[in-house]
Image 1 (cartoon, rainbow, N blue to C red):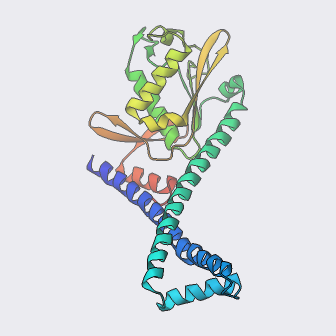
Image 2 (cartoon, rainbow, N blue to C red; image 1 turned 135 degrees about the vertical axis):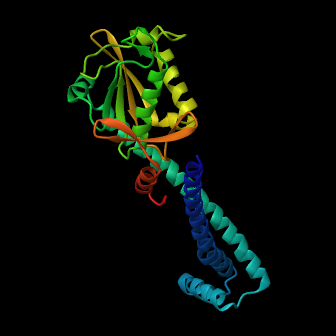
Image 3 (cartoon, rainbow, N blue to C red; image 1 turned 90 degrees about the vertical axis):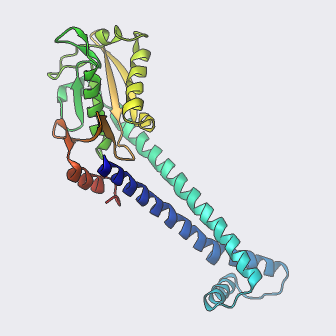
Length: 277
């Protein structure tokens, strides 16, 4: 557990460095571009400076570098530095949000172009897995909550993957379509909406509410049997599954999901989320 918290702190530190760099770049833009531009416009309005904009701004920067600046101008530069820093932070935040959305849209478009029967015929692999049910134990004909844990492990493996993956619930390992009817009977609301709510509740409670946005739920009907298709996009952070008092880190290897030890997890995270060591 201690190593897990150290890892999280390292991730936060890397994120902080990124935002500090954005703030510093914005501050430099404010001091070196915004402030001289404002001064130049004021000078031109008063018709007191015949220099071109480039010459004027170069002269202003040279004065700052040489320390030839008054107290009033220094306060003004600090103001522009603060404005630039805020703009830099906002720009980084907006870029990350927009980039993340474009990645999700492209991934979803690619997955939605695939036909479900053809997906099933591919068989299980690094980016595709079948599960017979969410919580109904076919062998024992009863509700088995441990099956939800198996689903969560698979989702965590796909979320940690740089590619993502697809999980089909209601399909046996051999590709036979079993359907979700037995699972529906275990729900307060025995339909697709109730099933989707159960899946999202499990993700939110065990993996993190923020990760629900990376799991997209679709339903298909094959031979009058319902199949749930979970399209999982790559997560923007490492995903751990809590088991008892320990945190497990799962990845996809071949057609299976396995947990990594601390050293393996640190190495994987350092490569998967660049800059995290």
